[in-house]
Amino acid sequence: MGAGTTESEYDLIIVGGGISGAALLYTTAKFTDVERVALVEKEEEIADINSHHTNNSQTLHFGDIETNYTLEKAESVKEGAELLAGYLENTDPDREFHSKRSKMVLGVGDEEVESLRARYEDEGFGDLYPKLRQIGREEIEDLEPKVVEGRDPSKELRALQTPDGYVVDYGATAKSFVDDAREEDGVDVLTGTKVEDIEQGPDGFTVETATGSLKGDVAVVAAGSHSLQIAKEMGYGKNMSLLPVAGSFFLADSGPLNGKVYTLQMKKLPFAAVHGDADVYDDSITRFGPTAKLVPTLERGRFKTVGDFFDVFGLNLDSFLSYGNILADRILLPYVLKNLVYDVPEVGKRAFLPEVQKVVPTAELDDIERAKGYGGVRPQIVNTEKKSLDMGEAKIVGNDIIFNITPSPGASTCLKNAMRDTRQIMDFLGDYGFDEDAFRSETIDNFPRAD
Image 1 (cartoon, rainbow, N blue to C red):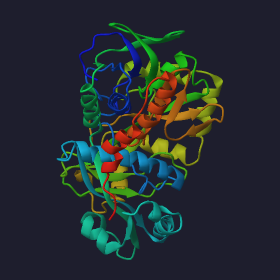
Image 2 (cartoon, rainbow, N blue to C red; image 1 turned 120 degrees about the horizontal axis):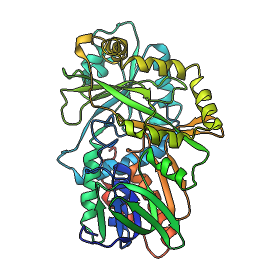
Image 3 (tube, rainbow, N blue to C red; image 1 turned 90 degrees about the horizontal axis):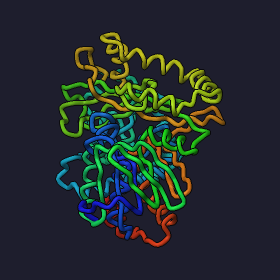
Image 4 (tube, helix red, strand yellow; image 1 turned 30 degrees about the vertical axis):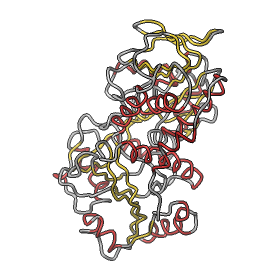
């Protein structure tokens, strides 16, 4: 499908041009026989909000060093990561918008070391990830000298390490998906086009935009936090709300790390543990984070989305009770309060330094600076019936429509989500087919396996 058509009627309309919407456009345009597809994005550029390379940690999550993942979740995430890694190996062999480095999760002290040993040997992670290996102090030092330098020599060290440390510019990847899709006939990509309303009628959907109406048989809303807002406007997701979490980073420009170094996840804490990452484009810069601050907006720094947040929140008793129950947790509440401090000038940097020193013991205050203009909003799902957080991604499947809300690891699993959604779209449409063999040939079949 290609970018030449001016028709306003489509078999499929995708709302949202971040990594998730772009991956679905790529999958349906290249590997199905659907004739007419439109992607609608409110920003002038594809992937200009959460998928922009400054607004996320650039990590491709495999589940191998994310110690808050169960084995079951790791198995699911692993396939998604391998699909995207295979696409990157196939499409970006010169590593123009991704790089590959060592990554590890670090255990310090007897308790953490034993936790990593059990995870690798007893819980099945060593079997699930053939490239993952246990390494001790000397090998850690060979790979990441600054991780060992200045550390108490009496403290036992162990890491689970793998060469599959993919660092990804998800914005550039999304644009690559869109460029690939535009090579096919029948594809329209409408940027700078805000969706004002979606109405469902007997003959499909009418998508109202500031520049006119689009008609589609099937719709997929992949608009980040706004997906739930649109779902609620259409009568879906009534038992759901959002806890918007703004992630930020501190930067060190002396390049203390060569790759990725994670710390162990704190038990019961739903957000990522602090880690250090060398930047995708400049390995002399290391990011430390993420921090996690609750904000009443759906987009970072855009106060006009405060009203959108309250649309999603609902201002009802169940939502208030859910927030109260979640934030009353004796582990989560101190974490939330501590993260508020990180935004305070000077004070925040001093408060965050001990987190950096968990990774680089010799780090000093002058070595780090808060990254200005970095970070996006990750919409954590709130189940207002259970009054709890539902961690990970959410998908609402309606009548010929799908809504995707994809916080981490949604970017890592974008092609797996696209594959599943494409199957569902084929069921909705009925008369079209999906060539999964060709899809896998262009993606996961190119992932380099262990010898």
